[in-house]
Image (tube, rainbow, N blue to C red; front, top):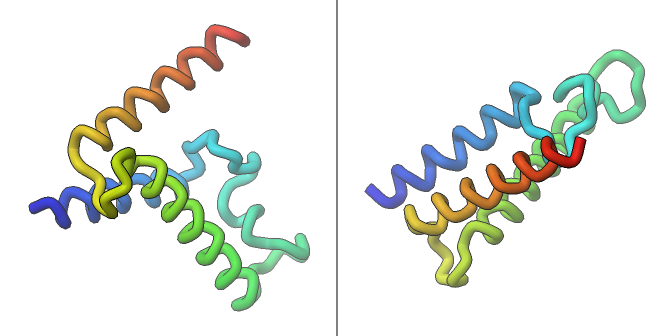
Length: 97
């Protein structure tokens, strides 16, 4: 059950990134524009692999950030705390604008 929860959480985070709805450093223009490193209007196999690696690295960083106690697993409480923190940051950013 725990593995299912972690898998589901990571999948949802990945899907939202692909949809371009994250504000965590993603440039405007969506995933295609980000992956097209040489801006030639096409994504080569090398560019695709680089984009996959970048997304995997980001997922690993977020997982590590969620794993507050460093035990190699994200508990429900840790996931809730991360969601609350991200919500708090978004609200603070909105208030500052």
